[in-house]
Every structure is written in structure tokens, then in C-alpha cells.
Image (cartoon, rainbow, N blue to C red):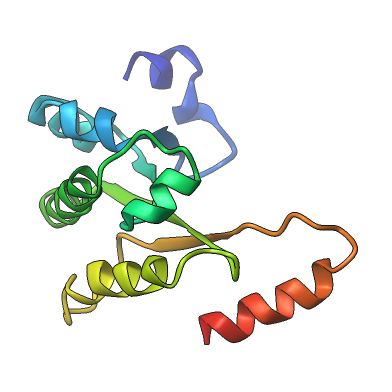
Length: 150
């Protein structure tokens, strides 16, 4: 609220200002409910993106991500709770996507997001971040990546 007043957003030409935050599974799980209650009271919509990367232990190890599958699952459930409870907050997640990841990455991702809910919600997007490294075969890898996704 202090930033809103200090930066005089109420006088801004941009209507409907938004706040964008980025976090980790650990920071999300350690956050008190009062944080989300406070964010929900701000005079703008808040978007929080959490990089979970994978729900697969092999992929997390490959990425050297210091995160357990249990924490990924807990964070994903917490994100769904926050999105249901707070009208002014939209929490999204990032998962990596590559043809070079273990098969278990894809099945764990589908298991996690598929168990999510069959109820459509306008909040809580899941973003897939492609991992394409080699420049020489970049276009071929992109096609393979899209094919794999489909």
C-alpha cells in the first residue's frame, strides 16, 4: 500500500495496476496467511509465479534443484488453495519442458496437474518453460518439443 501511495498509482494513466512477484516453493510454504490477506486487500491485482520446475525426483536432481517432490506437491496444493481463497491474487507455476528430460518428468507432471481438478478456473496457470540449448539444431528441437507436448 505504501508503494501504491508513494508512486501515486491512483494518478497513473495505466488503469488497473498490477503487482508481479516471483517466489519459490519454500518461500510460498513459509508464508503466513496474513501475507495473502494483506495482498488481497491492496488496490490492485497481485500475480505470483512460483518456479516448481518438476514433480519428478530424477528431473529435480538433473536440474540441481534443491527441492523435494513432497515440497513440489505441497506447494502445488497450497497454490490451489490461495487461488480459491483470494479474489485479488493469482498464483501461477512454472515447469520445465524438454525432449531430453526423463520420461518420469512427463508422467509426474501429468499426474500432478491432472489430479488438480476438473473444474475450470480462470486463475492458476501452468507455464511450461522450454529447455533448448544447442543453437545448431534449435528449430528441430523446438518441433520435437511441440510434438512431445501434443
